[in-house]
Image 1 (cartoon, rainbow, N blue to C red):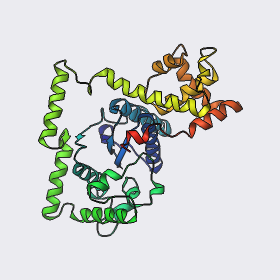
Image 2: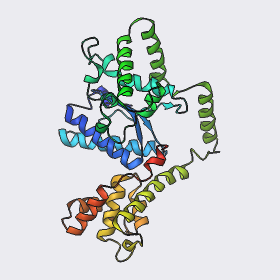
Image 3: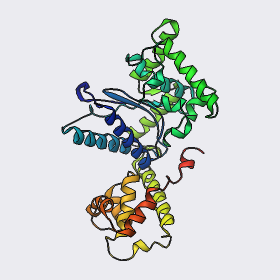
Image 4: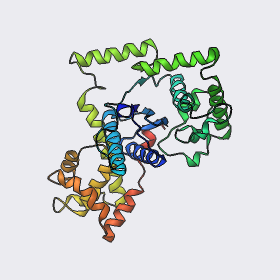
Length: 332
């Protein structure tokens, strides 16, 4: 989660909220993230986020930096929009009960803030959370939003109408309990650990995290925390995109490697990798043999503005590409 600098608003109107979700969609495309729940409030946002590629830091840097630039450009302001670094609470994904706790906390944020009048309005009337997508038709749900883990935690297998109705009944009943009676106190107790802690899980989960951190601090880095494997995750994701692009364009023989350092073919591939992955310009320039990394930065604008028929065709084909390996990353 992240809050506005000095508590200021980070969403002034619905267009800002739409722009944030568009930016989040781009971030998911670049990183392979899976979002299980989200809520956008006036001066902060929350995400229940899964990172199959171990790239939280790089992805959040891009997400927050890009949204800040877009917000500042739209409103003609400058400076920091968000208050420092985001806060991340590690959730034990092996126990799906914790998905229920976090998603319920997120989806009921508008209730606790008084933006939904319990008893007069349904929680789904607040548009700017993932909850309306949970209870609406699957066809209207963004591809980066996964609802199966949360529904499964509640025993609501599948995503048919009965599962959606079951989740709506569950959340509306939780909304009625907010701040009232013993159950309301129990909910607040669950959420207090989420608001104030650094992890959400059992004692065994905490012990494993502390052991991993201890090894890292002592210099005995584990494979899951070392810099080289983390970098390799992002590079492997970019390599999958590159292979998918070659197949889509009929470039299996890698004809783009021939010729000058900067060609239209290399620029199109650089545009794809910059817009769909989180690897650096330096990595792309070295991988595509484009020389100076500034050639990669320029490629994005060049391809977007290029009116040549061939480049437009390539760009159109690549724009329709689905994320490679999505089924594998999502566990099927």
